[in-house]
Length: 162
Ligand code: FES
Image (cartoon, rainbow, N blue to C red; front, side, top):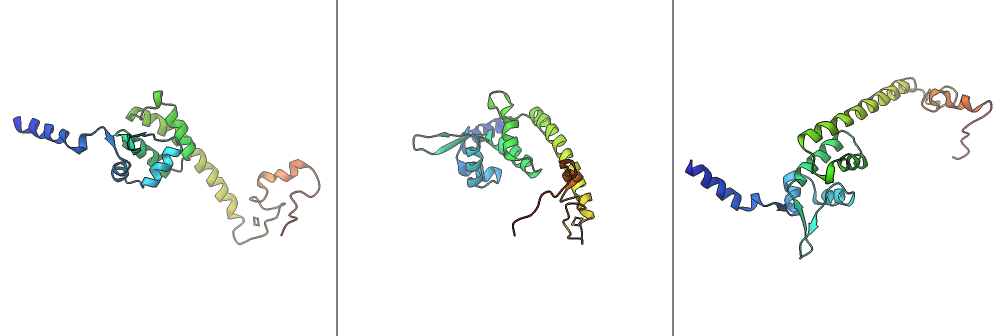
């Protein structure tokens, strides 16, 4: 269809088809603040290059990278772990759908572990609600698993401060 190819050629000639983006464009397209993008960059999660006028430019694949960072962050994965996971990809490339499946599977295991720990913590907290004793002998939060008993007889963890 002549009309279709004409339209395609026209849309690739405009700004949308450029291979590089300014930080403002990345912020707008990814719905992430410019300051957050600078922060991600300072932490090695994304990268840019400078123009002769010392302005940052990003390749378009940064949008996918930022999307993955945001999704991982929303599940509580620390930025350091996200960076480590992204660094496992060859040549620091942007994750493909297959890469994302692999990364997210690893993070799911970690989330399961964290949920288990939090559930156990919540269960221990139930006995403390309305108590306030914070006793080293009987409070499961103050002395989880009675760790003080393993240290032998006598006083442990004395609060000498205020
Ligand atoms: S505060 Fe009393 S048992 Fe934890």
